[in-house]
Image (cartoon, rainbow over all chains, first blue to last red; front, top):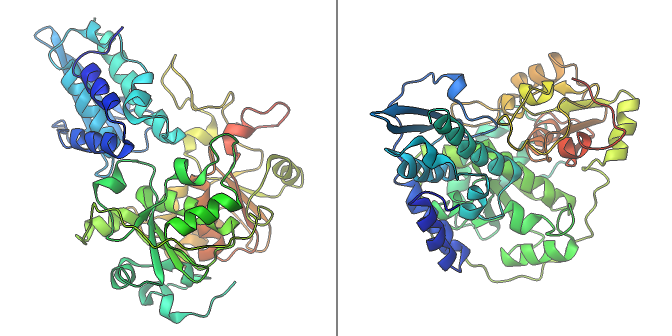
Length: 139
Length: 296
């Protein structure tokens, strides 16, 4: 099952970039579109993504029957988390909860490659899985 | 181990009372030596997007996965690989290599540790790492530097003094030797660290190596600027609170040996403990191995 747009399209764009540096640059540009959710500290621990060193928090709710995705990356240097957060938000915001069905851990490797550290891949994968779980709970 | 080279030392750090202050430099020192041909600055991060987004001008990137690890064996690069890496960044045996990076230098210390396996002792870590440099609004560049390639000759990697392997750790446990678990309290206690019904962090069992003291790596850091805590604070943290003795062998571990290289640096160079090793097999090996005891 393809990922929801624009995730699928972004992955296809990355696949055309042969140079790793170009793929990284595309992800850096994506991270710049991240908008932190307007929540105030301290963030609730139940919203924290487990195993993520960058301290990422997610809130998923329904607004007029559609998903409202809010993500805070509480680390100014968490660029990878910001890039992923921006993409997840754009893909799911205003969509039906079931649109998160196709999200999986492979998404992280499709975006960032296999050269991630174990901790980084765990944190990013957990971000995907937490947003997916929170979304599907609302279906 | 003392290197008599005051030229290479930061005044602010020299006054902190660390055992080997020559292995730590501050951001002022780095700013003054950005164009010093005898100094090579190396950024090493966990997040692969950080270095290309902007780095200290002239700094080379050393990537943990691509540069330091063997792609086929769970091991580090060999003599040949290290020589190629050092030649790529223009290093000679006389070059001072200064490491910095994200996560309060967690990855910088990891790279520093690997370089020590090849005996390149003319090296230091930049106190505060990448975050401090950025917070101080110091200049950054997205330009990747190139160096005139050198013909660096390295010795064979020597794991015997700084790296612990599984059987040595087991023997150390049986002798009730000093162990430091630098993971989070949740990892130490064996609580779940992953999403329910989704992949775990790579270990079948949760808990810690029997007898290990829990000192999360980041406790050695001032959270506001990422610098290392003072000698007195570090002594309190490791020696007074946890009872670690500076003259007894200590093995530090985490999940794969990256966070524990940060604690290894603190114990060995800042506190001056005489025999500290990093167990890079760490919990992914110990927690999965048949026949090895754990505690929860």
